[in-house]
Length: 102
Image 1: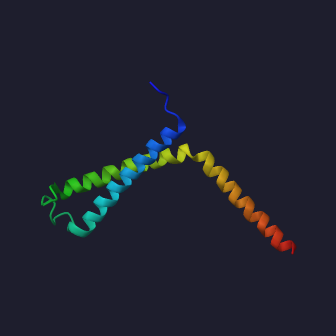
Image 2: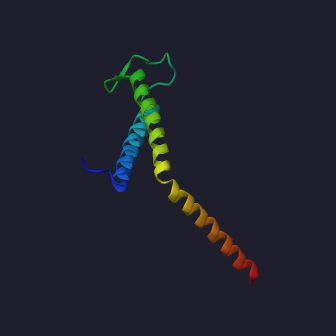
Image 3: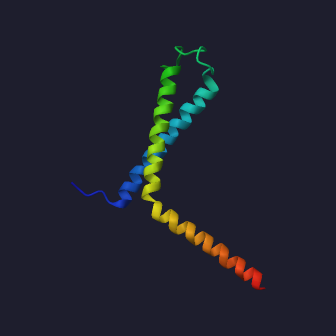
């Protein structure tokens, strides 16, 4: 079996993150616009083949999985985040020193 390199792992994580985001966004928007709010209103009524409880279950489980995948994404890119943040603030400091000396 081929060893999973860093690029393939990033691709898989990003693909999963995008897929989960689309599920959370779709279910959230669908519930907001088409399913009545409040527990007693339409809990067991079927919307597009699913009950309100099922829509909520899909939305909540996808959101939890998305949170986990975001954490994995941040762990995989942590060195880049730290490096970029340091460079960003270093450049700001250099720009301020140049402006003050003029």
